[in-house]
Image (cartoon, rainbow, N blue to C red):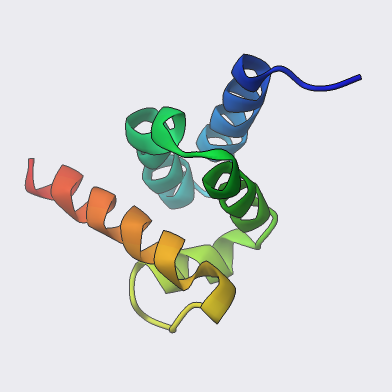
Length: 89
């Protein structure tokens, strides 16, 4: 059975909002709320793969403490931009 686009967006948003550490709940949840619906299929695939990474690694990548792996670099940069814009208000 194939997952509907609406169900996939809801599932990914739920995973983004319920990470396990509050910082990543906020950062990824905010990104999901703002940008998830505008991602194409490849973008959703990349976001879903990113959600499989450990929160500790994600936080270090998004915060710039550690460079992200090449396969996640563009998406991490976008998530960081969205997080920075939200922090500025």
